[in-house]
Length: 136
Image (tube, rainbow, N blue to C red):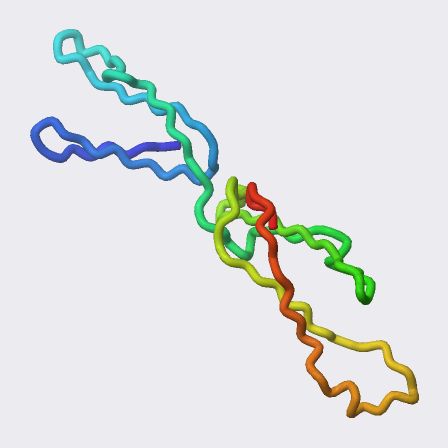
């Protein structure tokens, strides 16, 4: 990960970096010695930096499980969602608000049923449970 160093005033500097992969990094901050011109670590360098995932991003999150393609009437179907950020890092903790909607696209019916009996809404709001570690 590249870092930018910006000189401010009176010996102060701003170091800026942009890591897109979550994890633990070692950040070394070096300065030239005015006496001999050699670089050396400043006090406490290198530093351990933990980069955490950003907020959940719908376009990169995953949904898996049998319930994504098949269910049985009257029996709970299981679908697992794995929340990821825009950089495809899996979220470490459950965050965000999610909901799922099951919308009927067709219905098995018998020839003796009247179409009027099928006019009710077949949209079902499904509760989403936080399983921790970015799993729902």
